[in-house]
Amino acid sequence: MTPNRILFRVAALNATVPEGIPIHWMGKEIASGPLTIELDDDPTGEESRGELDYVQRRAQAEFHVRIQMSELTDLLSALGVDPQLTRPVRAVVRSEGQILDDHSFALTGPCEVQAHEVFGGTEATMLPGQ
Image (tube, rainbow, N blue to C red):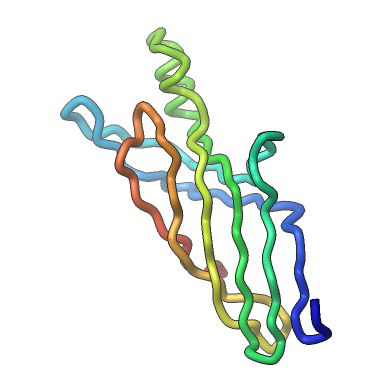
């Protein structure tokens, strides 16, 4: 580490997508309900981390996240589906962006969604927040 490059560990992440996403399953479109996105606390997973480069004014971070859809999970559980279908979606977001004047970040980047019985072939991207 140099004085102009700072390594860090991501300690917390809590985001919501109140409008959810449409899910195409078994020929039908189903509303997911709100999404909750948090750091994945799976002890076998890698740590969420990043680096700040103040010379280039660039930040990069890798977030290991768990995405939960409580309303959809409750509905599927009530229908008695296989519990594998209701487990959280796990993903890795690799993002980068500018370090802003107030030292906050405008990060964007691709999201690699791990295999899941309901969400095969899913693509996602993290956009800068507000």
